[in-house]
Length: 336
Image (cartoon, rainbow, N blue to C red; front, top):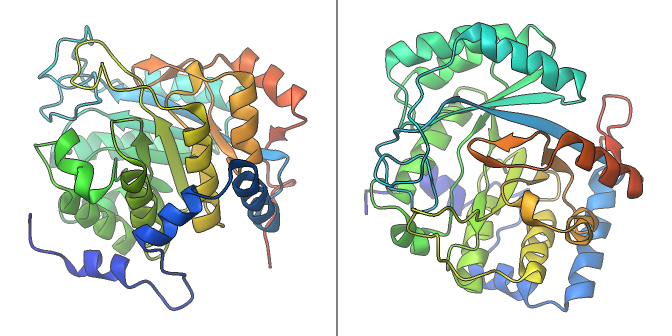
């Protein structure tokens, strides 16, 4: 393990206004009877958000494949044979064209992902140009560009980036079972740079990677004890891709995923909790339970980086069935 950073220590001793969530305390939440847990999460959700409003984001891969890291869940790693072709950074004009379409279809935030360990200074110069162009469309901007060097977060902020996505992936104690080319502390260090630059944080994780319930609790505790808590918390269900080490991971029962959503909502009451990867394989009933349990954000579009995502028409139909609507400035509930 690397030496603990000042930011890491800060996450373990949050501001007095934040409740400290031990792993045992979060695990006890997971043990709550299912319907009682969902009910409690729904109450917390309604205290902090309009329960009918769903924040819509679109995610585009602007640099695909060829990543040198060994993340066991990722088809974009150059170490695995998954059929994903290496693609260089896409031209700004193509990205802007996709962002315009996303806005026309109701997305309020445009998220961009690049497959690499982290950007080089020359990459940041290109990315800032892209951010400025997308921001000019009136969209919120979010980027997931990996580990950042000193000063890079400030450049992204100056270009107009609103959110930086950097997931913790899994619990600290399970991390080495999933990823060997970086450490949990590396994620914390980049999050520290992002917060220092004044960017909002989008930070979550993946469940279904052969972790135990206690390790799922460890992930949620790590997220909930960040100070401040992430503004956006994507909860991903593992998408098993042939050729990756986790292609044969054990199936996660759907109720356990809903429990994870509910626990995230209770421990991070003011954060957006997003249904992210894996939603294509979820039934309408399961998604409805996730919304009931406090999920209030989705990725909206036909592709999530390199894996499938429900079509816009399907999302619109489901939202209509559930009497949900895209979040706007007019229907956004901001608690006092």
